[in-house]
Image (cartoon, rainbow, N blue to C red):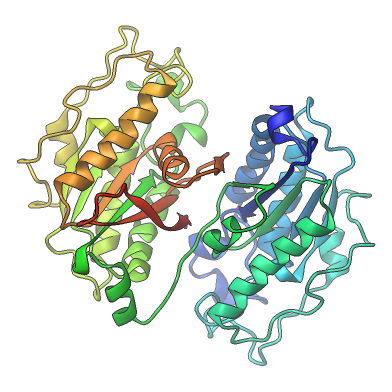
Length: 455
């Protein structure tokens, strides 16, 4: 791994990451009493997630992070604090010389699409006390000698072209300024992955939560992205927050410890993701295919409700079907042996799972691509082939319909790495999704339309 992924032998690694779970997404009334309603902090789970992400980066990427650059918004600063702590908690990676700097070029998009006008400063001026933000980091971590790429914040009302240019320019300048160092950039929701991908080929762009949500006038979106004019859209999404990751003792008393449900926040996240898909992608979802694991079923129930909650998109004819080909990887890397069924047989009552959806939603006439679950001990090659084959078969079976596939972490990661060349996936967060688009009349393989999305 060292020769391939470290910054020796002329390679530089850049990781671009989104902040953790922000307060106003989980406490809707928070902004009404907040002094700075446009600058929400993280919730506790967001801090925990950020710390674990730091640990995961250290233990998976096998190269040290030399510099962290971070947006001045509080949610990003708090994320960076936890990530830095997580990076330092993995003993075999040396991050002792890691330096941190705040960078205005990584800040939130300053317009009403990203920050609602009713919470934005009335005068359009966003103030940050840089010294107070820097004081949140461990002593000696902040590099005060670094000059920002953007020494001033954008003006309120920043255009789409403006923020895309700013993000990409910031990444390019920082990479060129520190060519012998590996960088971690902590920023916000909208990152134009395609533009980043066009950077110099010697930069490995390793992404955790990069996403691209392009808002256009609805008539423009319809002509570009809907499945009219011979185009089909496929979204592949991970389930929401699973119980056993937040309640470690849950499995010890559970009847089915290998099949955890969602926590409440996971259901909320899934519902909001459904709403977001409807309001941003501007094409209807015709069919939802879902893994039989309970966390995916519950995610699908909430996503379907969220899709139906956006009046401008017609999802009234949406149909749902369970698909074994989208199930979890059936081996001890994904499901610990101590919680897996002793006989290696995973049982699902399909009728009970189908009953969780609104009446008339299930399509009982759909034949599964995989009519049986994989055998316990499934190989890495086996599950990757299964995920990709399931996607291709479903897309080809319903060429005039837009599909949403709800699956597991590796399902999304495999999709991204398969359909987007030279991309390394280190983490797939809850309810992260990938959009794919193809010309139905074309014999070409399905191609990535837009980037990796997460709410």
